[in-house]
Image 1: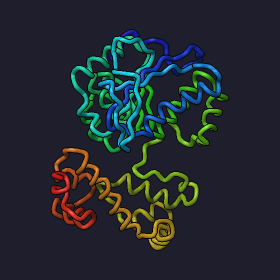
Image 2 (image 1 turned 90 degrees about the vertical axis):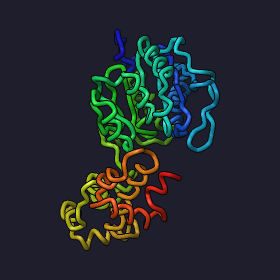
Image 3 (image 1 turned 90 degrees about the horizontal axis):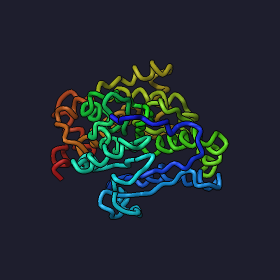
Length: 326
């Protein structure tokens, strides 16, 4: 836990906020941009350096993002340098970067900083450093179950972003942009926040406490709420799939009408889409985790390991065990 908690950074203040952005290899370039660009734009539209940030990496070398694009850094992460805010941005492989030295450095900064944040998988390092104990937090929805199991002393929520005292966490790129706009709004006022949003033609349509969806519908929500509601029901019942009739009934339409809605918008039946959604969730667990195959089958609604393996092989061309080995 952070000691001697300092005044919140989420309050009116025009004193420059010093920020250290620790970018880890395997991060998403969109998460990096969603962290940096809003505060860069805030400085530009206000005509002042109200956010004074530096970008660092674990070893001082440009970390490669998932797209292969490296991020230019000013140097190595130095826990001895004073900062108001430390933001840890992580992605694929972040769990493996939680070395004892790295965690000790994060804890050291947390003792003097006003706030510490984790973006996407950067939340894992905050948790490993003990900074989430007794606090509410979130992470990317793909990791939510494992994250909650790893940190039982934290209140893990499916929110887009969570602010709990001096610790903030976000679930991904878009929620990070939302969080940074919130920071700008709280420190500099709504006018500056609106100007920043306008720079990126960004419409903030979600609240911090909105649950992270498995399927991001974007503006599809506004075009056909029946489709959106059906997909939300599917993603909420990946482990215990509903029948198409049950989904239609809860959506307030007939199964035949639901089939027409899916055919028009997606080009396939509700059942086929539902199966594809479950298999996509299974594939992420196969590729990105060490969760046993039997548990993956149960989590994604298959009656047996054999049934799961057959469906997976048909969809992806090889058995889940073989894909994991590869």
